[in-house]
Image (cartoon, rainbow, N blue to C red; front, side):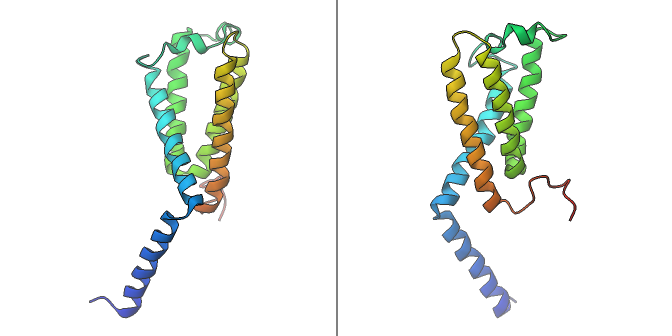
Length: 153
């Protein structure tokens, strides 16, 4: 049997959830979170198939020459990092968004070392700023500290 207090508590929870879903700030957070879960995972997995694009062309020669592996093999590592970043956003958006923003910063630097990819670097700057916006919104909707579980309680 449901007690009156627990019934009211469940009702309050449902009403709070409905209000939250109607909140434009929460909607923006949900859109950005979804985008930064799906996009890194899809692009990361594509590093193994090259169905969307041949990713090796996006690695600056000055960086690839310093690597002990081929550009194609380096893209496998990039793919793993991107999948992990997307999963981090799914599990802990407050921290995952910072990882994605930092990763995008690295991608932008790499693109600036290439000739003819400045438009892609500019687009990625927009994505970096969106990841920062997600992180800021996550401070409201993800109650865990940014460095959870490393943060001492």
